[in-house]
Length: 410
Length: 181
Image (cartoon, rainbow over all chains, first blue to last red):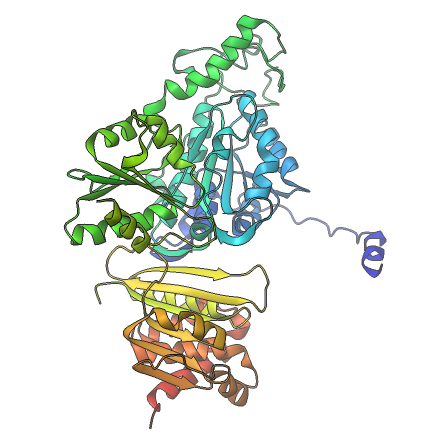
């Protein structure tokens, strides 16, 4: 009871605000040390977001993603940005979508339970073609699961979690440096393709510290949304053009547009017309398929002469890389194919891999989510060539685990 | 040093092992090595088992978890029992005899000291046990420079606690110098 009585006390009068002395962005950037430092994955995400121009964060802190919110709560106000701690994750995704419509580059960070709550909001951002980024630092599930243990359980959820056949752009780093780079890329792709981009991290990666040297700002490529150049009465919120990239006006700039989660026409007004509904769905799909080369990124490691390929993402790919080195040392020709973009799935690269090698090993920290996609692409559907390594107890798959399975298969 | 040098610091939550791991990793960065630091702990802030792995190398480090340690620090019996068998042959074992009473295996290079008791006796509190044992480890393994460790402590801990931690570090160094004498 003592606790609640505290709340009823009248709030102390706010101290008169000091005149805002905003530090210039350039100054802050030069202030930051450009040397090799010890940095955590979550920290790298936060600095990547800032360097990509993120100026709005709304979220509800959750292990193992908390440090992202913690750092941005300190850094965003310094740069004139906004940090809001929301009441829950549904509000968080809605807030970043709204902020983006008002012109902000917005981001939120969460983990499994919050990611599930955000699914409807993610669909709303996708159908309204509003740029925003959701960082999901995966932990063991379902439900609250094991907050401080590692899993890769949201590979399929990040693709199919939101209802209604929407497209997805999902990136997956494997090192602290890549956390930084792919956060920038996620924000850039969100702006360019006007969509909700998801960045998946593993718990171990979010919490891991590594020696990294971040690049100079001059070498960071930042993309911002295309602004309309037409007079306001000509503006269409969902304009058709080549490559399916349409300009986006912000609220308050004099352009009038309607935003709804209902299926809409080019002006944004609800429609039930079959032709307009088909146009809208086509545009959402073609944005991805027409630009697949720009979206897909893949790392090929020791694959030139490989007879066995390991296909893995995130932290499991690091174990795989160590396994490749160990196997090569023993004269076994193994390589690694690692997707940095998991959605859209790198179908072409995987098809080529399946043509070139005899055995494919798919280690993952779930009960078979990446391997489904490989199975989809294996023509004969025989599992003899496919070695699955799956683990969901919170422990990592080690290089020796992979090496042992791989030797059994030969 | 070319290949991965794997260190596991283990004990229970609240003993400051993850902080010690961060300090060691930062010292390795100052020495221009490659390094990864990972951690494993329960959702509770005190109690439960806690460990951190630091891998220091001059090559790329792929897998960031220590599987076959060159050095193991165990501050509780439970941690010692759990991880002792993953210590490499000729690996260095450092135990806090305040809590570790039984050794399931006779490791070749074992260092036994009641770190917690020493911290209480000399600095009046067990909270610096982590830094004291880390300094001992640093001296015994020679894995990072002593100056780097000192700088790393000063950069990492809160300003109000720098002095007491540097004192603990010095005690740790002295313990290593006088060990077995």
